[in-house]
Image (cartoon, rainbow, N blue to C red):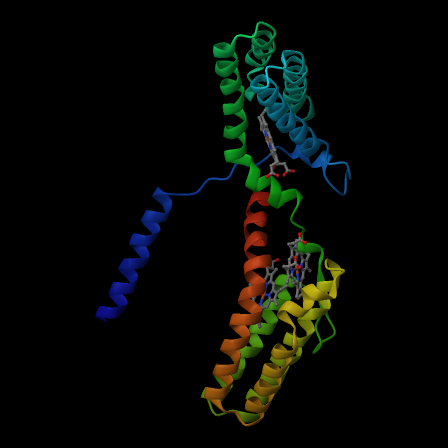
Length: 278
Ligand code: HEC
Ligand code: HEC
Ligand code: HEC
C-alpha cells in the first residue's frame, strides 16, 4: 500500500515539474512546405539560408582582409538573402530587421567598423532567434521521412498495416506469449510466441522503402540477430521463461531500441509538430 502511494505521488510530482519546464518547439508556417519535396526538389528556402550564411562569412572575411569592395558585395548579398526570407515565407517577414540590414550595407560602404558590428549583430540575432525556435522542427517536418506512408504486410493475417499498428500487433503477440505461459496455456503460448517471431522477422520488409543500401538493414538485422531469433524460437518451443526473457532482452536492446532511437523518437516528435501545423 505504501509503495503504491509512493508511486502515485511521484507521478504527480514529475507531472508538475514537466509542465513547469516544457520544451517548446516552434511550429513552422505551412507555406514552408512549398520549398521541400514532394512540392519542390530545389530546397529554395534552405538554399537561401546557405546563401545568407556564406555571405555573412564573406563579409567578415573581406573586412578582416580590408577588401572593402568585396565586403560591400557580400553585405548586399546578405541583405538580399535576408529580405528574401520574408518573400519566401510572408509569415516570417515581420521578424526581420530590414532597416538594420540596409544600415549594415551603408556602414560597410562607410567602412564604419563600430556600426558594422552593431548592425551585423542586430541582423545576426534574428537568425539565431528564429533557429532556436524553428530549426529542429523544420528539419523533422521536411527532412525526416513520414512513416505514415509506410505499410507492412502482417505475415499472420496478410493484412497491410501501418508501422504503428504493426508494432502494436507484434508486441501484443509477445505479451500474450507471457500471459498464456503464466496461465499454463501452453498451446496458445507457443502459437503467440511463434506469431511474435514471424512478425519480428517481417519487420525488415519495410527497410527498403527508404534505404537503398542493404548495409543499413544489416545493422539491426544481421547474423547475430538471426542467431538470437533461432534461440528465441527454441526457447518458445520449450516454453522456457528465463531463456525467452534473456533472448528477448537481447533483441530489445539490439534491434527494437536501436531502431527506435533512430526512427521512432523523431517520428514521435514529428507527428506532434505536424498535428499542430496550420
Ligand atoms: C524501423 C526500425 C524499427 C524496429 C526494428 C522496431 N521498431 Fe518499433 N517502431 C518503429 C517506428 C518508426 C515506430 C513509430 C511508428 C509511428 O508512430 O508511426 C515504432 C513504434 C513502436 C511501438 C509503439 C506503437 C504505437 O504507436 O503505440 C511499439 C510498441 C514498438 N515500436 C515495438 C517494437 C518492438 C517490440 C520491436 C522489436 C521487437 C520494434 N518495435 C522494432 C520502428 C522500429
Ligand atoms: C524567420 C526564420 C529564420 C531566419 C530569420 C533565419 N533562418 Fe536560417 N534557417 C531557418 C530554418 C527554418 C532553417 C531550416 C531549414 C532546413 O533545414 O531545411 C534554417 C537553416 C539555416 C541554415 C542551415 C543550418 C543547418 O543546420 O542545416 C543556415 C546556415 C542558416 N539557416 C543561416 C541563417 C542566417 C545566416 C540567417 C540570418 C542572416 C538566418 N539563417 C536567418 C529559419 C530562419
Ligand atoms: C520511412 C523511412 C525509413 C524506413 C522505413 C526505415 N528507415 Fe532507417 N533511416 C531513415 C532515416 C531518415 C535515417 C537517417 C539517415 C537518413 O536520412 O538517411 C535512417 C537511418 C538508419 C540507420 C543509420 C545509418 C544509416 O544507414 O543512415 C540505420 C542502421 C537504419 N536506418 C536501419 C533501418 C532498418 C534496419 C530499417 C527497417 C527495419 C529502416 N531503417 C527503415 C528512414 C527510414
